[in-house]
Amino acid sequence: MSSIVIVFHSGYGHTAKVAQAIAEGAGAAASLLAIDAEGNVPEGGWEQLNAAKTIVMGSPTYMGSVSWQFKKFADASSKAWFTQAWKDKLFAGFTNSASMNGDKHSTLHYLMTLAMQHGGLWVGMGLMPSNRKASTRDDINYVASFAGLMTSTPADASADEMVAGDIATAKAFGQRLAAVTAAR
Ligand SMILES: Cc1cc2nc3c(=O)[nH]c(=O)nc-3n(C[C@H](O)[C@H](O)[C@H](O)COP(=O)(O)O)c2cc1C
View (spheres, rainbow, N blue to C red):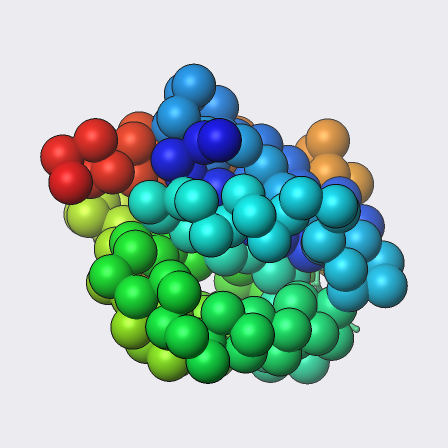
């Protein structure tokens, strides 16, 4: 079982690409758990989550919040909530949307609330924003969130056309998650 489980939903592949980059940054400690189009996790998924030290949750931003498939997963996690089975695990979150802002914070805030309901400890980005005149879209944390990973992909861009700086930021976030998980 992996110490870091990245559980995510992705309708069109963008959030999945971010999840892969986080996993790449986190290295051998991490594994991916995709919520399917029906909002279900594959067999053995709940056991993986129960065994994890760190749960990283990701969803695209749809209409200013998580996708319904992610929400179905969140509601199903109430089974773990009843016994506080995930208490004191580390949690982190990420979301991708089309607009630069796009109300992504609303999605991250929901993920954070879910983590708090489970009695978890939230891990933010730990990365300074790239917000200088000389900063470019390909710099680390240009979208500049502290609460969790935000990435933006133009509405007409495929998952393969995602911004390189966002993918690099996701890898850096994965490295941080591996470091804080190992330190526990
Ligand atoms: C139903 C729906 C609602 C969306 N709502 C938003 C939104 O509130 N803000 C935004 O910036 N983008 C919004 N988008 C765009 C998606 O966030 C964007 O296409 C994202 O890359 C999709 O990620 P995915 O490929 O992992 O599903 C929406 C897309 C869909 C399909």
